[in-house]
Length: 283
Length: 283
Image (cartoon, rainbow over all chains, first blue to last red; front, side, top):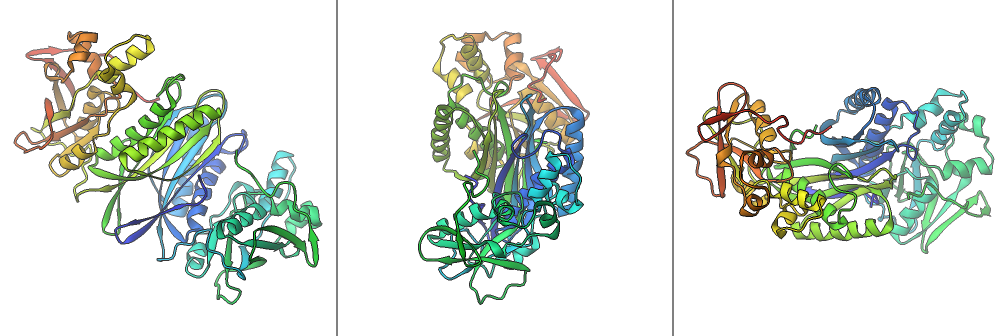
C-alpha cells in the first residue's frame, strides 16, 4: 500500500485519493511542536496529490486523543494549515490514545487538473530524471533538532514545514512521463520509479541540488551527498521527461532512464557503489 | 467530528466521504477474530454511506502493524469483506504498531444515488421516527462473547458481522427528511437527530423492535428494552419521514418529532425517566 495515490473517474472529473499516516517516534519526535506535526501531516498528503497534478479538495482525519493541551495545539495548527492550503476538513474520527504514542492518519482528496494523471510507471528509455528544488535540507534540519544545535532557519523549516508543490505538480502533469514525490529518499524513490517502469536508472551524484546551508552544515563531499540522496522528508517532485520536453518548472536533471533494471550511481565519470540503504524503508 | 458523512459535488456527481476508526479495547476485543475486525471496520464505514443513500466506491486503510499472523488474517478478512460488498481498496498506509493496542482507520468513498442526500438535520415537526430491522442483538451478542457463554448464532453474528444497509439507504434517501445510522444507541442517535433538526423527539419503548432471541436471552422487561435502545453497534438506519410517506423498506415507527427540544420516553401511556446514559459516548 501507499505505493501510489489512487485515481478514480467520478462522473466527468478525475478524483485522486491518498492516505498517509504519521506515528510518534517514527515520523515525528515526541517533543515536536503539535502545530508542526499538523502541518506535516497535511503537507505530506498534499504532496502525494501534487505528484498526480491534482488540486486538493479536502481531507479526513483519524486522530488518537492524548492530553488536551497537545490536542488543542494540534487542532489549531491543523486549522491553520488547511486554511493556508485552502483545503476543507471533510470529516474524521477520534479514538482514545494510548501511552505508547500517537498515530495520526489523513486521507486527502484532490481533483485531477488534466486528463493526464502521471503514475510512477510511465518512464521511457532515454527519458531524463529531474528533481525540483533542493534535497537534504530536511535531513540537516532533523540533525540540528535532534542534536539540539542551532542553525539556519531554512534547514529547520525544511524539516518542520515541508511545502507540497501543488502548482508545480499541476504544471508538470501534462508533460512528464512519470512522477512521484520524494518522501523516502531520492535514490529509493528513483529506483522505485525505474522498477515500476521496467527500466534501469543511472544517477549522477555530482548533479544533486544541494543548498549552500546544507553544504555549510554537512559538507559537500560524497558522504554528504549520498546522505542527502537517501533521506526522506524532502517532498520534492521527482519526474521523468523526454530530454527535449518543454518544462515550465525549475528543476535539476539528476539522471537518465535506460533499458535494463536496477539503479547505478556515478559521480561525474566515476562509478560508485550504492549505499547500504537507499532511503527510508517503511516497516 | 464524525458527526455526519461529508457530501461533495465532484463534476456532475455527488461524492460522500466518511472516516471511522476502531481501537482495540474500545471498539473491538483484544482476542477478537481479525477477520471479524476487518469486516466490522468496513461495515461501520459503509453504514455511514448507507445513511446518505450512497453507493460505496472504495476505501483507504490506515493500519498499525502488529504480529504477522494477526495482520495476515486481517488482510484476508479485509479482502473478503471488500469483495463481498464489491468495494475497491484504493490505498492506505501502515505504521509500526505499539503494544498498547491497534488503531485502525478507514476512509470510505461513495456515490450519492440521487440528488437528495439526507442529513440528520432535516426532520420536521410531526414527522415520525422510524428504525429499520431490530435492535439489541449486537448487545446480546457482545454479552455472550465477553461472558464466554454460548447462545444463538444470530446474536453473535449481529455483533461480529454487522450488515450495512446500503440498498435500504438508497431506497430511503429520496423520501426521508433526515437519516443516520444507529452506531451509538437509538436513544442517543435519535436525540442527536432531534437536536440537529431543532426539534424534540418522543420515543415509545413499547414499539422497539426486539428479536425473539434477544427477548429470550435478556428478557423483554423495561430494563432490557432500555439497554437495547442505549447500546450501539446495531447499524440500523434511523430516519424521519412524514407519517404519510410511502416507504419501500420494512421499518418500525418508534417515535415522533415535535416542536421543542430534548428527548422524552414513554412506555405506551406511561412517561418514564431517561436512563443515565443514552448511548455510547465517544471519548
